[in-house]
Image (cartoon, rainbow, N blue to C red; front, side):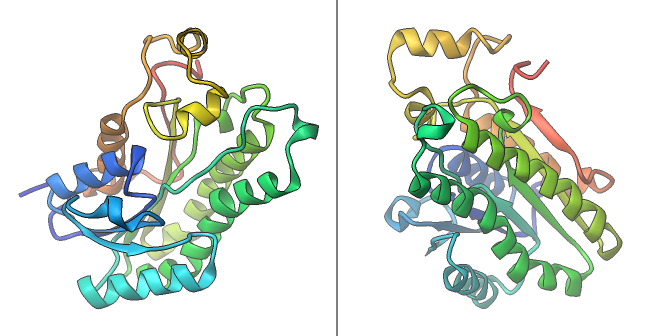
Length: 243
């Protein structure tokens, strides 16, 4: 049996990038997965069910959770992976619209999923929540200030959630990926050139970008019963970037 056999998981932003790596690992380890994404077509044939969802909208999140309950009966694991960024720029030049989008998708979504999923997990007396943050929330990069701040918020929220929910049997952890081969990579760099890639790679001691598989492996451990005594951890999956 797989390490997640019998578990029902929701993965937001699960149709691409790190989310797709997490979905693939969860499915391989026996979980039933609901993939929540704006791009529902990309979620087809990934081995799970799919629902279209804007994680910054309360009605969408409520419908996503209801669809999961109807189809799969419960929610054991929630992965808050959906995220966005603004383009690199001096902090004062980032538009208000871009600022709002970053905090709606990266932060408000965590509040909304908690609003709808935590009561279910409390009722079950068990559950695992994983927030996909970033090394940018631990060791900020210049010109990505508001993105950095949103991921720092996510790390702090993880610890606060973990302390509050531990007595209810619900564990909450985070992973902090370094830049990886995902659709957001070009946005982080501003332009995808060999020179810019070399600049980013020079900050990673292991000398490579992270992969969706790296995140899937870390997520699987933190959401599995193997990590039953682990909560409030913000794990750096970063090739040494934050050392």
